[in-house]
Image 1: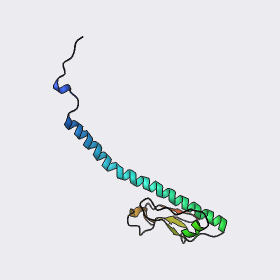
Image 2: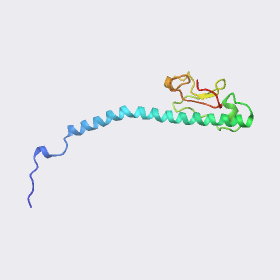
Image 3: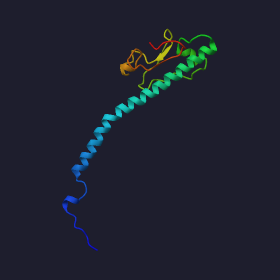
Image 4: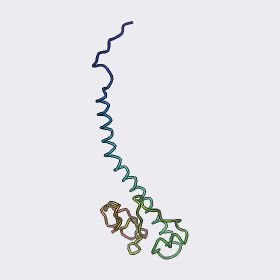
Length: 132
């Protein structure tokens, strides 16, 4: 049996190579984690808004009128509570537009997701009503 002599160029990765790879992985993580977090928040807010709008539709079908605030939905048992939005703020009911969404005055939420923003998170709960 013959053994091959290992030379210096055939050793495993050096410490510097390992550190460079770890640094690249860290950079990629730092760049992608905030985007993934925001996408997760948007999905949760979309789900919350859809659930609240569905409760508003049920309220209208059973009560014969549209609700004007969240307390009506809670007191009549259509919802247990209104959850905070994923950014820690609140949702708002705009009865004049038949819309549920994130209010414009929520400072900790990107402006584009607030009502009136270019990517607003909202749901219309009246058939035939417009988002804009």
